[in-house]
Length: 266
Image (cartoon, rainbow, N blue to C red; front, side):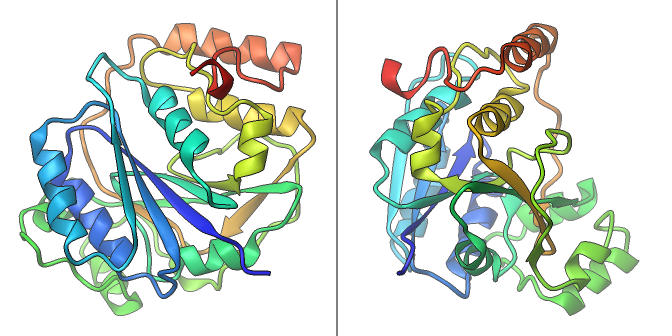
């Protein structure tokens, strides 16, 4: 049975980074997927990037936008999860460029009862700015180029790029979850009521989602190889991090499965 597949990209006022990410998804070896853009209130420049890309995109695109009322990543994701019709969703960010085989690997490795946590490689500030300044010239993300970037100090590590994609043994650890590289069955996301919108501001909403999936009996497997390439940018404000840490601790203590304010509360 062929698994229908969706990619959900979160973005906020970073049009040049989003352009690089979209063009990288257009170069996937497997283009049988739907692209969802979870736009947390960006300005018109982001919409323009999306509309230009849409004209030549090999995949269908849904751009979902809401008003800018602060960091509301959880809510815009929940709206997309509620609407999506695909069996399996890859959750990622608009600052993370995929290698060409990413979608094919996640589709091939999808298995009932599990969600997959992937890794990332960090791009330097100089390389990130150079890529964004290059207009429409998005480079091929092949191994020779990665080797050159590593020798020039443009990326922070090379080993994940050298190994064939495979999954680790299943486990229930929460440490190391990357919200920018996580895939899951849509039905499992519905089971835990999606993201919890009680998290305000940056931080821990992804860990909370993974924790509730584990509490519901799903197990985690880590994708070895095929990291996403994380573009450098200034850190988001973290003034709510202490409060969000407390919400996550409560979720863990209660072994909570469903989001307090999630998809059913839309």
